[in-house]
Image (cartoon, rainbow, N blue to C red; front, side, top):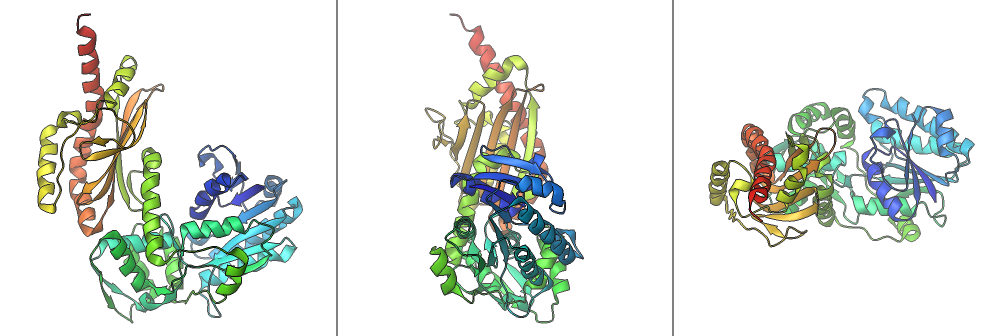
Length: 467
């Protein structure tokens, strides 16, 4: 089908689009900043504000189905009114364009709702109010890297071996794995699924406290010590989350207000009968989220922002390369490993190897016969390789999983781009990155320049040999 995705740059939208393409659909990706969407075959980016009915109607023309994945929580106070305005505009545009069905992702919740959850339910009612059939999926916490709820869980558990929590730590909820949510969203496009409201969730009814324990267990961390403080208000707990986690504050504050509301599936049989999809338990969902992120990192490494994003600390560096030296630099990347001089500042790397030994690290040098995907390079594994780029990954470090990438760019300003990234494991990993950040600033610059300098020297040496 030809489908439209409103909220294409959001967490769910950015995951749904590649899944829809893989399922054979053509996607119209709607976003106010559509130009920032990566170019993908089968995706037509369209710059559209959901509030602009005229532009939206034109964008939805000839679409069989439209996904509505928009919310206004990041706008702060008054988000509920804004959500209502956008829902009315979208419903009217979908009706005018002749869209056959709207699939909307809302939130679980019963009779007593927070402002956030009440807004989610109201949006579903407004979308269905113009006659276009609507399939509304109501979900609680989504366990996937990039979900605000999951990132709050990740940072709290990784950074705090012990924590003081308010009474919402015992609130019952029924989370769903990202992979399972996407499966339900895609199935909702099937005409065999009748319009209506469906509650979706995994098989486990749990609490936030139990999810923290589950994350620690899956990540290989010690069980976190949690002290309940009933007098800790949502406002105070929001400030506490701000202090510990780098997630968007406006969105996290709206979510924290909802944490005292029980969000559990009440009609599981109806959803199971219609969708007939198996779902993961909490431990499996967390493990799948971490593995999915790990598997995606080689392809995303050069686009990961400097700083911390979705639990990954990263920094970028680059070194200018002469246009005549580009081929030799690329050739040099294919001769990596077996020598600390390849990285630059070998004495610093010797010191790093010694530091890791008390923590159980055993980092040994090794040069492979050929640099191909899956080959061992020192304590790394080749995660991705092209004629002009190389991405290495390791899980041998005590502080977490790490990636090291080099890419030769041949544009108007030829250079070697280097990216180093660490997905920290526990507080020790966070402290490690913070402590070595100043050192990284120096070492990474040297490492990037080393790739240009050493490879050029090798090429000059090769060219000077007699034939």
